Every structure is written in structure tokens, then in C-alpha cells.
Length: 474
Ligand code: FAD
Ligand code: NAD
Image 1 (tube, rainbow, N blue to C red):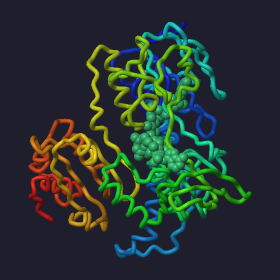
Image 2 (cartoon, rainbow, N blue to C red):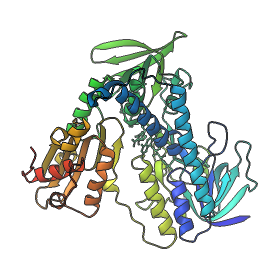
Image 3 (cartoon, helix red, strand yellow):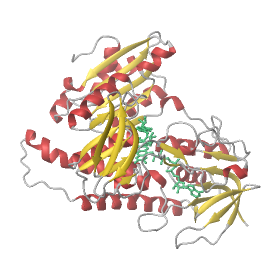
Image 4 (cartoon, rainbow, N blue to C red):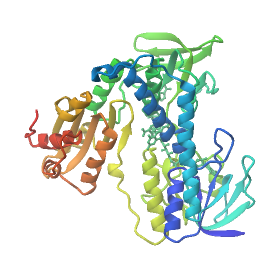
């Protein structure tokens, strides 16, 4: 039986990064992955590369260009006539982007001498893993043995009984990445990250989008000021977000999906051409044999781990979406690095308090650290500094003046506790805040750092100055 220092199960951003880091540290590594791509071929990269982060951002970028040409180019003096959209070509570009990147992981595996075992891995006693082949390309090895196992089996879309996904009229996020035309009317259940991102894509391409959200407020984890601004901006763009809306059932009349829902005002019915169910994701342990192996799971099915991703079984770690914490690609990857370094005998550490979040609507929403509502409920004394993009020279030059940067700093030490942005390129701007917080930086540290002019990053500089009541441009 083939024995490895490390066997990784799952090759999403958690598993493939863990495998590469283990190999860099001189460990022998095999990675078991059972994903089949659109053509039924085995593929690395997991949810993120195949049906998550990358394809959704490819469509967000394409649809943003389309909307710019249709609505915003004229302001720059550009007349774009006859602008039209070829959705199939857009989807084909998305698929090409995905396949280039997933093949890139395969070549990184070859470079790092990581063995890719194609199939589903199931845990057996004594740190052995059985591989059940999937698709046509089978792996000959059927059981491998490992000194250490890293489980990185990710997550799958959550389902609700009132709207059963058929991947035709009622789809999940994966189905919503492959429509061959913009539905005239699109319903979405869930105004979370996926609902807002994919809702934006199809709205830009011409769909009338209605989003039904069970909660009474949008994005409860986001700083309230930023979430309220996001709500107003997205509504103004034409996303019809209905809060406090509980879907009670769905039906069909051949042509359309009929959605029944209730809110404070009573019972309602709407008909849509397509419906996306985006109500969260759940941990994926379906092929793993986790319970038989004796792994402790929590009541929601997440594999229980300590701060360093150790499970209850010695030598067996679990990382990424299948364990507690935010379901984000970069969180999964950093846990992969931490665990690889622990296995190699190095220290392993990760700062869970400053994992950045980004919602890729336009304007983008990004944050790290504590929100104002967190600080209030903790009883932490803080100071706030905010700067609107309307006062930024660069934002004005770009005609992208919507949004705000908001810094929260400790009242006594001035330490940065949270940074919240809604605005152009917020996804890139948040990195500065994360670095400052990682070094325990203060608002004054950012205020005294020279930012190039004219840049959007100057808004961060000004928000930091505003914490001390001395912004220059407002
Ligand atoms: P996954 O990426 O889910 O990978 C798990 C892998 O394990 C899969 O390839 C699966 O086939 C494999 N596997 C499962 N069981 C077995 C088994 N028994 N044997 C072998 N292989 C197995 N996150 C961001 O940070 N930024 C974004 O912009 C973003 N956008 C997203 C957009 C969408 C539409 C979706 C759905 C998700 C998005 N996410 C985003 C979330 C991100 O995709 C996940 O957080 C991330 O993929 C988790 O990585 P992972 O390695 O834990 O799991
Ligand atoms: P989510 O948790 O972000 O949002 C789900 C929403 O659905 C919530 O607002 C919830 O209140 C609502 N909901 C749940 N049940 C409902 C029901 N029966 N009726 C109406 N509303 C209901 O989940 P998601 O949008 O499905 O995304 C899943 C995860 O994938 C995210 O939490 C995130 O971790 C990850 N993701 C990240 C990004 C990114 O980083 N940009 C993008 C997409 C997905």
C-alpha cells in the first residue's frame, strides 16, 4: 500500500494550497479529488475555481463592462451604439477562465510532485483512505495510508423544501452561472452574498430581479451604516430586495415558477422565469465516512476542530468550509498553510479576527475586523472616522463617487478595530486595513503614512485622519 506523509482530501483552495505548502516543506503528498467539470473531466480547484469565486467574478466583470457601455460611457464622451450582449459567449469566456486556472493547479501539482488521486476519498481506520473512482479517468490506487490527513471537502449549497432545485427553472448558484440568456424575470431566495452578486450580474444583463430575504435587515454581519448604504444603492440600481419575506411554497405553470411568500403585509404571489435558491451553504462530508471513522461533527454537520484545525482524531486535520468560521476561499487557504506548517513541525497560527470579507457588487463592499454594532455590544469605547468617495479626486475623475470608507479605532489606544468600505475597488482597498490591523496598527499609523495622489486609497487615509477629527478634504 502506497504511504504518504500527508494525504489531503479535497482540492479546493483549502486542500490544494495545503498540498502545495506540504510539498514545499519536503513532505510526500497525495491529494484526492472527485470533482468532474462541465465536460465530465476530473478537475482541481473545488467550488471556488469551478463554480464559485472565479466564475462569478468573471460574469461580474463582463456584465459590469456591458452596463458601463450602455449607461455610463456617454458621461465620458464615449458614444457606444449597437451595444448588445451575447450571453453564450460571455459564459464561454467564463468557462475558459475557469479551465485555464484549474489546469494551472494541475501543473502546480506536477511541479511540486503532488500525486493527484482522482476519486472520492473515504476515511478508514489507521489513517488509511479508500479512493472510489469517478468519471472515466480512474486512479489505480484504491487505498492509501498517511502519517497525516487533511480533510478539505468544502461545502455544498443549502436547500429548502419549499423550493426544490431542478437546475432548470429552479437553480442553485451553480445553475445561475450558466443561464444561456438573461431570464426576463428572475427570483432569488436569499439576499446574502450570492444573491446580491449573481442578482447584480443578471440585472445588468437585463433581467428584472426580485430578491426575497427572510430577515428584516440586509446583511446583518455588515456594519449597519455600510449595509444601509448598500441597500439604498442596490435598490436604486433596480434590484428589488424584499426584506422579511418568507417563502412558503413554489409551483410552476409550465412557463414560469410561481413563488408564494409572506411578509408583514400578508401573503403574496409572484411569477418568475427562473428562480435561484441562495440560502447559504452546508459542510460537505457526504463521501467521507466521517461518522464511521469517529470524527466529531457539530449539530450543523461541521467537523469539529480546535484553533489549529486539529480534529478529535490524532494526526487528522480539517480546514476550510467543512469547519467553523467564514466560508471564504482565503480563510480555507490560510488554514491549509497553517496546518501544513504544523505538520512539518513549525508553528502554525492564523489571525481569525481580521479575515477580510468582500461582496463584489458595484460599488463593492469590503470589511475587516469589528463593526460598530459589535463594538457597542462588547461595550468597547471607540472613535469613528469616515470619508465619502464623493470628496475623493480620483473617484470624481472616475465618475465613481458613491460610497464611504469608515475606520473604527479604540478610544484609548487608537488601535484600528475595524474598517468598512462601500465604494469602487473596495476589494483592493481593504488589504491596507488588514495589514495595518495585522501589525496592531493605529488610525494614526495610517494617517501618517503617505498615500499616492490621486488614488482611491487616499479615502482610507482621510478616514483615518477623520478618526482624530482632522480630515483635509471634508
Ligand atoms: P471547496 O472549494 O468546496 O472544495 C472542496 C473540494 O473537495 C471539492 O473540489 C470537492 O469535489 C472535494 N471533495 C469533497 N468531498 C470529497 C471526497 N470525499 N473525496 C475527494 N474529494 C472530495 N469565497 C471567497 O473568498 N471569495 C469569493 O468571491 C467567493 N465567491 C463565491 C461565489 C459562489 C457562487 C460560491 C458558491 C462560493 C463563493 N465563495 C467565495 C466561497 C468559496 O468558494 C469557498 O469558501 C471555498 O471554495 C472553500 O474552499 P474549500 O477548499 O474549503 O472547499
Ligand atoms: P449567505 O449566508 O451569505 O446568505 C444567505 C441568505 O439567505 C441570508 O441572508 C439568509 O437570511 C437568507 N435565507 C436563508 N433561508 C432563507 C429562506 N428560507 N427564505 C429567504 N431567505 C433565506 O449565503 P449565500 O449567499 O448562499 O452564500 C454562501 C456562502 O458562500 C457565503 O456565506 C460566503 O461564505 C460564500 N460566498 C462568498 C462570496 C464572497 O466572498 N464574495 C461570494 C459568494 C459566496
